[in-house]
Image 1 (cartoon, rainbow, N blue to C red):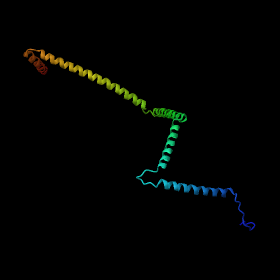
Image 2 (image 1 turned 30 degrees about the horizontal axis):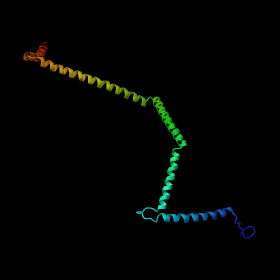
Image 3 (image 1 turned 90 degrees about the vertical axis):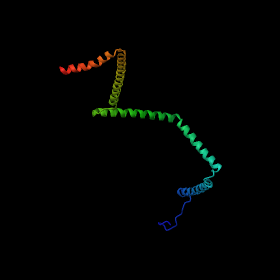
Image 4 (image 1 turned 30 degrees about the vertical axis):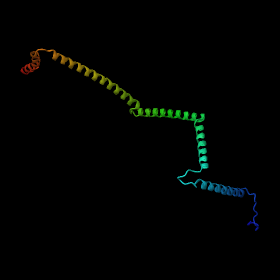
Length: 178
């Protein structure tokens, strides 16, 4: 009722809001009925049995369509260009952040990763030089030992060998006397 005049309010049936509401309700009712029938058909099989052939075809069609769409998208020049740009920006950001951190470390007089790398390289070079020198000294010692063994076997008389053994003893006795 219209409160101002005491008469009943006349409703216009062509009101867009009311018409939309009725259409929405009808669509919702049809959609709900369709989906409930589809779900009943989809779940009538047991877990041990395969789904109906129609559902299998629908599933395969949807998966093929998705795979094709993703394949087309991932191979598109726009996607590849954007990925290239993203990778270049990531590399540039990494370089920029490394430079920033290096400058910050130098500002506080802390060693940078480049300093540590240089020290490690120097240590490796020293290690290889020392190992090469130790191997050379080992070879020389081995040669001297083999020569000493040849000299001892060449001395034919046992008296010479005994004299050679006594010489260090005599030298020690003389050293004690003096």
